[in-house]
Image: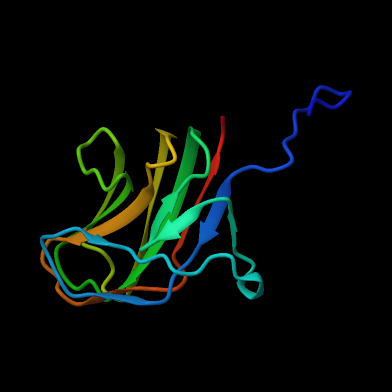
Length: 152
């Protein structure tokens, strides 16, 4: 819809916002997918507008250009570094994912964020993973969020 002042509006934009229950990570040297499992829950004011969610993967309802953003809080990484990937189709290739790293994170808690813009079909999906260089027991907390929407 184009309003008289020239603003373009859409009645329904595919989008999502999710958080998670606490997830304990017990592996180092491998990418572990984040299990985003809170969405479409009115009491948490989260939404899932058209996306299908399976095992923490977000499938868009229509093909188009999408942007996603995530903030991850992790507790108790006592050594090494942590990598956070926001991915299209679980690809860690350098061309279809974002890569964020925290070297020597605070051992109490720390944050890391990632963003990704990608052309998507309805069989593509967004996901996120975490990797540590040496720590084998830390938590990704429920204050972490993952969100995205169609931009064109």
